Length: 137
Image (cartoon, rainbow, N blue to C red; front, side, top):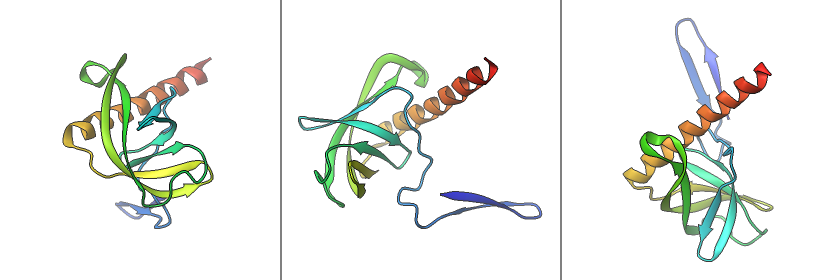
């Protein structure tokens, strides 16, 4: 992952080269499904650079490319809502482990990138608020 080194007046962030998907990963608070052809997979986590999903073992291999779709629960101005906005993109499998497939986004267009960024930031906010509410009980 990454860590911070504090020096006199600066903070340096170093990234471990063993990290296969650089980026802060979040696990969506609500279950999300990825669609590929006639198949449906459970989203495990998502980041600004990629995602991980669960499927049958050995169904895909490293460097396979899939054109997927998923629906982001975003309303006006990025606020979470019952309305889901579908996005489509290519993902490239960069690592497999048993039933988990780690992927990198290959061709996110600008609009889908903005939607994805909003979704991730909103999920982070929801998690913080949930943690605060839980700790106050």
